[in-house]
Every structure is written in structure tokens, then in C-alpha cells.
Length: 298
Ligand SMILES: C/C(=C\CNc1ncnc2c1ncn2[C@@H]1O[C@H](COP(=O)(O)O)[C@@H](O)[C@H]1O)CO
Image (cartoon, rainbow, N blue to C red):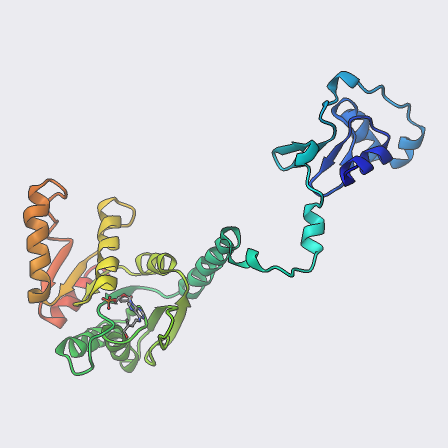
């Protein structure tokens, strides 16, 4: 006999039901009597017993409810959710399963929104994690970070090395808000030392949401897959009107020209994109012009 059945017997029901909690109720035919019994337990002793319609009883025995799902016979679990909750875990596999992961993702969104809600106007600077400090692009990114901060606009980067460090460095040394939204990567050192408001994310997609939600313009410096991913995500969201139109400035004409020739050439000729709005994406070699363009509406 299952726990559920044992509970039903105690309740004096022929075809009782058991909840996922392991608390038992009587069968459907006596549901109304159940409700009034619950309202006044003392009446339950003296109230006349309602006749149970045996026709309604399942030949499979008790019904076990788990939310909208019902289980009968051999499908009824031997334990119940409350017992599972209270049971000490020898096996921790559940920690790595999707339902639990959903809560971690949710908490990352909550932390991110909480950290950035009062940031104010901001511009994101994307670019390679590998740019050496001696590279002219590093110098340019540092200048752009500084110029943006001097306009009282926060600078948001991926918080890593290379272009990210340069932009954060410029912003922090200019006395501005220098935001680093880092990503947890094995063997990586974490946020660069020039970040004064930082958070490390486990999930790339949560972190990308933060860039898009809190930046009102973006400067894209030369970079690889990470930079391209961030730029194309933004362009896709703008194109599909999921986010408001915002200036996207590509720093480094020679570096980017080939990609945009290809987009405006074969990709457009095959009808895969409509012509790129020249107001949306601008290429420049001048860090000051990049800053002017990206901060125009702020
Ligand atoms: C691979 C190296 C460092 C990785 N560390 C990163 N930290 C934070 N953000 C990163 C990192 N790597 C990539 N990103 C993000 O992508 C963009 C740069 O990627 P790319 O492939 O180098 O173009 C950047 O905007 C970040 O948001 C080397 O030490």
C-alpha cells in the first residue's frame, strides 16, 4: 500500500486522492463535504457521512496529484516532494541541472539590473582582449574612454584586458564611471584594475543584455569573435526594433572596411540584408570624432 493509500484509508474514503505533498483528501464525490469539514473540523466528527459514488472510483486505485498531472497505480511515487525537500542530499547532481540553472540565470539578471539601474547615461566600448598596451588602438581606446568620461557619461566595457582595459583606464583616470561587465572564464584574471563599478557574469547572454540595456551608443574597436558577436548582436536587435536605434561607431577604418564592403556588396546583393543605414554605422579613424558621434544624443 502506498503512503497515499494509507492516508486515504485513515480518511475513511474508498477512492481517495493524495496530493504531491503527501496530504490526502477524499474522492471527488465528497469534495464538497471535504470543504465544509476543513472549515470546521469538529463538525467532521458529527456530520453525516456522504455516500460515495463507487462508479467514480478509478479501477487503477488512488489518484495522486502533482500540479496539473495525475498519477495512479504504479506511477505513484514512493516518496513525495516535501520528503524530498527535507531529505539530506548525498547526490548533488541536481545542482548542475537546468531547473536550478534557471534560478542562477535569473539571479544574474537581478544582480546586473540592480548594479546598473542608477548608472545614468553610458556608452559601451567593445574591442579585442588581446590588444597590447603598446598598440595605437590601445592609446585611442584610452583617449575615447577619457573623453566620454569627461562628458559625464559612463564607459562600459567587458572588463577584460586589451581595448577594454584601455577604455576603463581612460575613464577612471578622468574621474568618471568606469564599468566592467566581465565574464567568468577559466584561466582568466578577472576584471581589469581600472574598473570602478564591476560585475562578473557566468553567462554571456545575460552580460550582453546589460550592454544593450544600459548603453545608448557603442564604439567598436578592432577585435575578433567576441567583438564581432557583440557588434552583430546589437545590429540585429536594432534592425528588428528590439532596442531603440543607437549610434554604432566603428573605430579603425582600414580594419573594418573589408567587412562592410562585403556586407554592402555580396550580402546585400543576395538580398540577405537591406542596405546598411549610414546613420546607424559610421567608420572613423579619429577617436575624438568617434566620441562626438557616439555621444551625440546624450
Ligand atoms: C582571451 C583573452 C582574454 C579573455 N577575457 C575577456 N574578458 C572580458 N571580456 C572578454 C574577454 N574576452 C572576450 N571578451 C568580450 O569579447 C570582446 C573581445 O573579444 P575578442 O574575441 O578579443 O574580440 C570584448 O568586447 C569583451 O566584451 C586574452 O587574454
